[in-house]
Image (cartoon, rainbow, N blue to C red; front, side, top):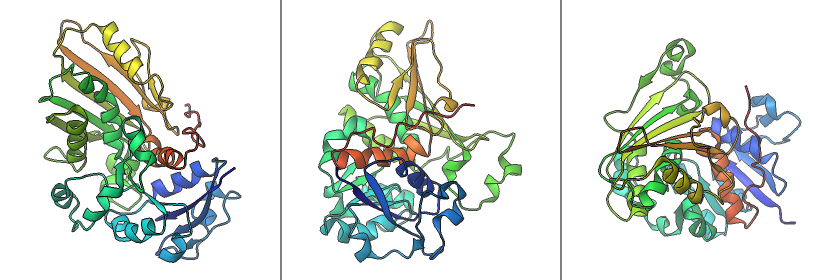
Length: 347
């Protein structure tokens, strides 16, 4: 039985510790090194007490030669780090899965605009695949670099793509209303994310423009085969984990509620991590907390030519680290669900 040796670069943030939590339950993966320049020498279990007795690892400074000994390296780092190291790794045969945005966008001009870094990854993009397994599985199998999708794009793309690919909605006026828990902002200190600042409050942000918008628009247009117009407004809600996206589109054909339900059930019938809920259901974020599942429901409001999809994920699992491990399983021809069968937490 093959064991995949894993390196994690940047293991001190929420996606890094989530990788460690999930990989601890993976029977064919072994984390051999985890890096952090600021926490060199600190035991993983000292920083994350939930991992006491699970890992006997200490954070180390990233060393490219040591990382080359791994089968796969996850980058849970700020934007711009993975692209600076990926070339050396893939040339040695080590696969790269980036949880930041370095390999999500093919339009590097747009990438530079939104991420405020010089785009030096151009020559590497031929080796990179967008890591949304439900729509890029065959390409992922052959990739050397995976650009793990953003959390909002995961919930929104999964929700709207069955309709777009079937040609059932107008492509110039899709609206996505996203709501995320505060862990989506990362572990760094920020006044706006203090408990006293965000508790008992609800707000939109990034209305004038958000870096996930060009990522979604690019992938939607590619998969739909035509230019897609998308309005995206994210919101911050006072909870730690969870993401809900409500997507609105205008039907081009007169489809009943039952026909729309059947479309979604058929589209995702073989997908282990997408659950199309029964007609009349409304998914909640607590239904997916701690799991790699995306749960969704489709509605045609009475007397309307609109279709509404509501989609929920755990932003740190299916929206980040769980999807990254799902991609690793595909890359190494392992069962796709390996290490990812955690049941959602209730309450």
